[in-house]
Image (cartoon, rainbow, N blue to C red; front, side, top):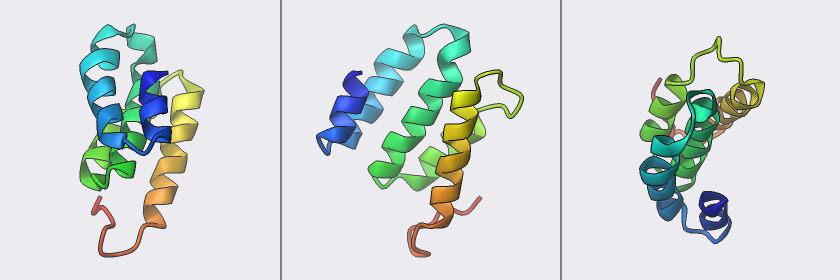
Length: 90
């Protein structure tokens, strides 16, 4: 909720802080992959591609959270569309 509002308001750095400091410590284990996917999005929007890629790497491909897996796949694909000078090296 709050993190998405920060992203929509053009403040992805605030969203990163909210997700790392508030959401990740508070969610149940089953929700961690989705929070990590949103954290990766916020990091991408904040221009922190390597950090975002690292968060995506923490989402296990066997996760039962199909929404998180689809979001992670979409984000990884969008990383490939990032201009070369800012593209993350995986």
